[in-house]
Image (cartoon, rainbow, N blue to C red; front, top):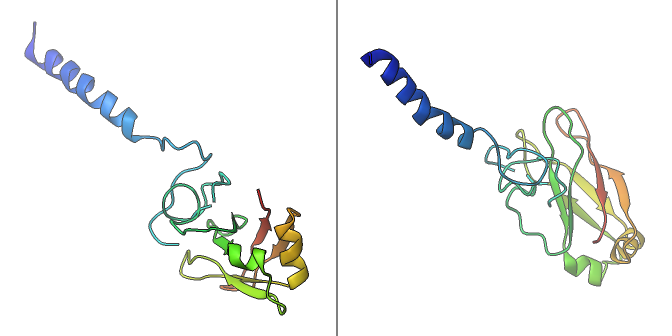
Length: 142
C-alpha cells in the first residue's frame, strides 16, 4: 500500500467527524446563537440576539420577555418584570431592550396594557426609533 493514499484517507477519517460536530448549533431553538453582547430571543426560536441560544442574551426575565422582529440582521430582547405584572404602576412603565448592533430600543406600556398582559392577552407594539429603525415585539404571558 502506498503511503500517500493511506495518509490522505487517515486524515479525512479524523477530520470529517470533527468538522461535522462543529458545524451546527445543537439547540432546538430554531436558530443559531448570536455573538456575545445583547439575544435571545426568551426561547421564541428566532435565533435572535447574542448569548445563550435562548434568544434572551443571557438576560434573566422573571416576567414576560420576547425577542423583537429581525431588522437589519439583528433582534433585541425585552423583558417586563413580574413585579410590574403583579402590581402594574399607575403611570405604566418604560422597558429597554438588550443592546445589539451597538444600540437598544424601548417600549412603553400603560397600566391597562400591563393588566391585559398579566391576564394573558398578547400585546404587539413597535419599539422606539433608534439607529434609524424600529422593531416589532409581541409580548404574551405563557
